[in-house]
Length: 72
Image (cartoon, rainbow, N blue to C red; front, side):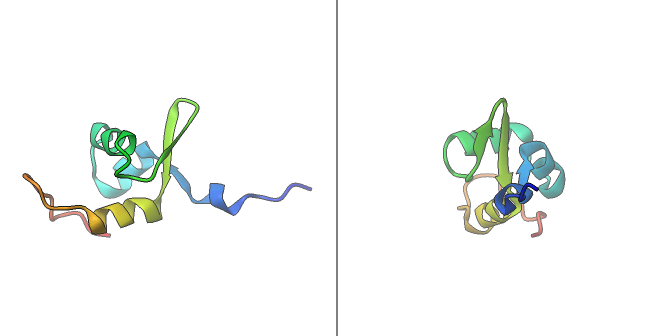
């Protein structure tokens, strides 16, 4: 019998994050590569958690165009 790793239950792809939070895929990839969003690459896919995306949205700084229509 195998045990499930709870950390993997929380993982979402950047495509899922895009659909859930209305952020663009290119933007999510950029902030992931720059380390502004806690995300990891597994194979060819970037993954993160909802908690990490929500933390990013809460702590991001206001620069230039800023979206206020995104709710957590």
